[in-house]
Amino acid sequence: MKKCMQAILIVVFVLPSLFCTVPIAAQTTGKACPIVLVHGFMGFGEEEMLGYNYWGGFDSLKEQLENQGYTVFVASVGPVSSSWDRACELFAQIKGGPVDYGNGHSAFFNHDQTDSRKNFDGLYPQWDQEHPVHLIGHSQGGQTIRLLAQLLEQGHPGADDVGYGADNETALLLQGGHNNWITSIFMGFYTTQGIDRSWLENDGVVNTTSMNGPKFNSTDVIVDFNGAPIKGVWNHLGCENLDHGDIVGIMSWPNDTPSGYETLHEWYSDLARMLTSLD
Image 1 (tube, rainbow, N blue to C red):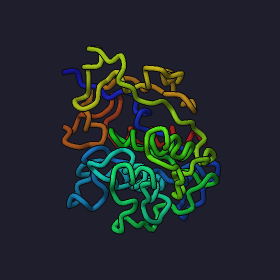
Image 2: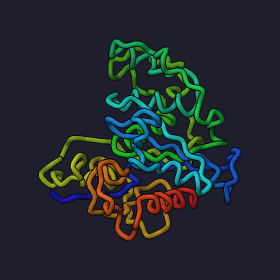
Image 3: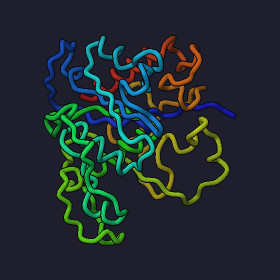
Image 4: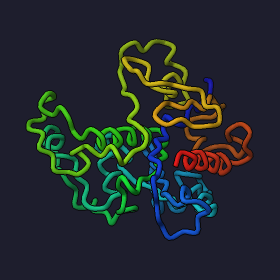
């Protein structure tokens, strides 16, 4: 089976900063803007696996970036939850306060709208259009971030059309209209139409074809990354000889790193520099 890790910007959604102030001796204003790492399916946060890191394995990518002057947070959302629930939990973790899964969504799926165990102080409570954040997601973390971006912009539209009932949402996230929280745009959606055998190539978990951007009924632009990231489009970084978990250092061999890099830390450092170049 061909091993590929294509287009990390599929799972990296950039919310660049206009201005950020945090107590850290960062070299630039861009570095001071927080980076939030969002794990994938069956993932975990800090201090949940006896010192083993989702982001870095027995090492810590978070600490490596912090040593370079970045402010980094590691999110912990439901490991087997839906992307909707994970997006709501991610919002509450960053902003602070109790998680709110929405009136319509909770009624339709017959579960509690909130969870008393999930009331957060906030990783970055000042998060708003004047204090955006960078989000890096791996695997389902990318889908979680993409849905979060859509809900921030659009809220929970069309609830009546899908049988959710009156769309009288009270949660800040689900009200929509937070376009200025993002200087990127929501990119694409998923469809099952037209999937054929060309979709079989994969990295062990995710098919390769879907990695560089949406393919059906979409006007999204996909470009080959040439060293300068472009906002609002899918920047395709190419294909690497890596399995699904290699890119975060989980169950990987020492030499399983992106081509041209001796360590995974160096690759994430370049990724962080690319994010801050958008500020």
